[in-house]
Length: 302
Image (tube, rainbow, N blue to C red; front, side, top):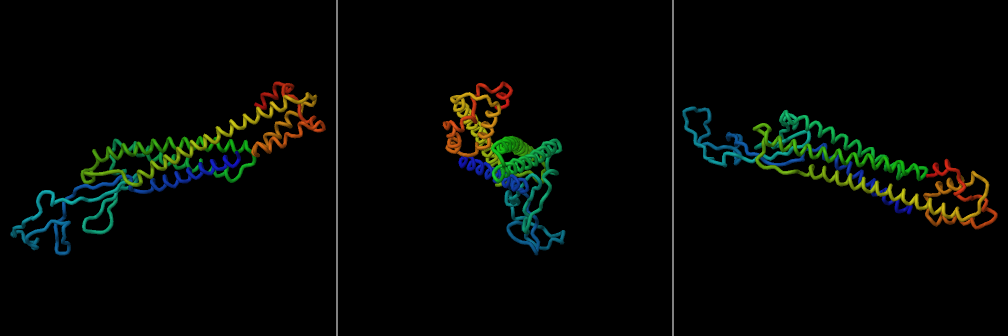
């Protein structure tokens, strides 16, 4: 049972750290959405010629009397410019050049939706902070804890923080999706894309949410299973003590229960081995019938 509990703890910790890495990477990147938009080609010059500019029949652009003919017609006068956008920035490629031109995505968002975008950013930050807190508690539980009770407490708080993180992450992703769609419809004319789709950062963000939920479910399952095992062995110990003779020492039941709690992290066989001395008349004075335990003591044990 101890090895199985350790394996589940390691699995939950690995999922939490994986979710944390995914969320930080997605939050800091600008590839949540990618697409293209049509822009007019610039005029060709002597220094810049090619298929990404509008050509004339003459290169004498300074002569106002010269008649210029544009050979491009219809869609040939436009070019598809690629772009990618994230929570912080929206970047477009530079035509006939190298690099990208980036603008703040917050400035592109319609004023009526900027409040929702800021809420999305705050929810993303809370998502990362709660994930980090839950992963830290899981690390403490896996690497160091003194008793099984301390481990259960750490496990319970880690499960709470991880579940809350998943809720904040889901809300943040959905709010950003809504804000981006509103920006596509109501954003600036020089930015609105004709075609767009979700990018790898968006998929990474939802992958982080999936790992977070898997870690929370694993943690809650481990906590519940440990509690049920704890109660089952407690009842087993009570049944063993009820079959023995009654002795007047009122402090013996508390000693027996403390011995059980301190040895709970061992296997069931170790616990049975420690209780073999019950059949020895010389040492049977250590145990009494639990029916003789005063009422306040019973409540304390439960």
